[in-house]
Length: 207
View 1 (cartoon, rainbow, N blue to C red):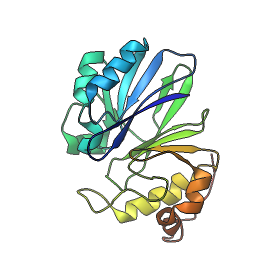
View 2 (view 1 turned 180 degrees about the vertical axis):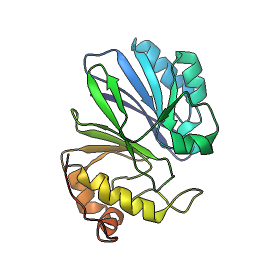
View 3 (view 1 turned 120 degrees about the horizontal axis):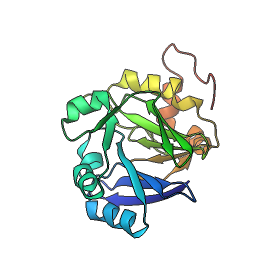
View 4 (view 1 turned 90 degrees about the vertical axis):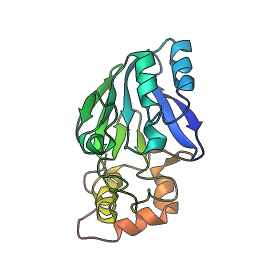
């Protein structure tokens, strides 16, 4: 997979344009700021945008979505729970388990509430990459004390979803740099603390 990262705004939010190595189709993930950068990149590279994927409803991840969608004539997609809170432009509602095609590479939509009630991660098993929004970062987790955040949901997402990803997966978050799950399992103390709490058995059925 070919990944282009854009950093914008005072919160230095990450937005991404992703495509396969030899395909022209692309998805745009979390265009929060500076819509022209996304638009110009897609047009310059001659790409065909399949849609805009929003990992959650916070402004620093959705602020430029409508303008990018209008300019590139592509749909905006968000989990149904967050779309109800966001109330902005959403053309397709996403659910846990949805599959999206990217030039023959399958993207899986994983519902990972905690930071927001409708937060999602976007996973490619073929490329061993995950776009995690503000759910998990290299050394910490997303805040759970804002709006519809939930510490209990974050624990469940860490134990039942994230901990299934093998060490070879690379996580591309909504802020800061990427990290492998191997690194996260060593340095992310908040993630490790979630694994040690709660009642559910972690680590079943790793990808």
